[in-house]
Image: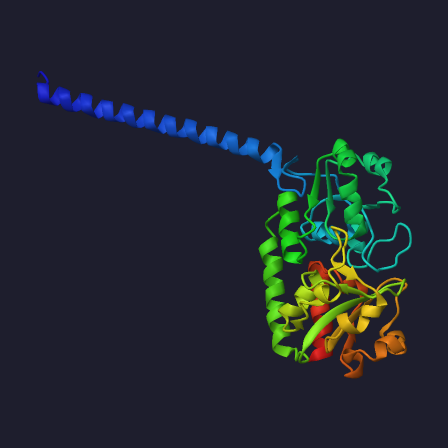
Length: 337
């Protein structure tokens, strides 16, 4: 029995549809493979990340990181990055040569992190000997400024990323470091932990009335205040303190280093600049304690001292990272609950 023309047409149409379907599946598989190949290349190839000196190409998964600012090292351990060497210096925190700050000393020991030798100039030979695939520097403070000054030499050793000096708040620093080392997974969790602790702290803290200033007690005894945008004043504002935002203007807008988050001024201006009714003091290495400041007639007449609204915080609170910001919240709750 012969097939009718309509039956032949139906069979051809069915075969054609099947062939077309197979062709579509083949094309999808080919495109998927291409997409996966591109993704793999992106995952394993260099990435371009922001830096204070402009975008920098860095390894996709750096394994030998050198960090040249002790204020930034804690973030790398929080993000489970590999740190072969770190500058151990923190503002006002004394430590022996080769000794790391207590906040991340145990992490450094576990990873075998080496201490970057401290000095007037960066030890380029030591850094090169670590065979870094990524160098991270910049940020606030003298070590941060040193890495900025030596940027060209450091970049000749390995890709060098500098945190902008205006990035003072720990959450922004954490995000910057996470982007640099491509480890974003824990960022939201860490920030959520802080927000929960902050909310709890705010519900317990009873802040004193009036404007608040934050003073560094330094070895030279020159009056020194953190600017309102610095990390610690920002934290105090978050828990409810009212900052004295005019301290720089009252001091005559003194010049300061690009990496500095504080101002120094003449002792003759002490009563003019520190007239806030609430004052925090941060005794740095070699600086005077609160009790020693109380015994100084120059300070004893300041409104905060007269009103007995002067409070001391440890040097580790001066530029808090994630770990020290959580500790500082505990200290504030204990003092002002």
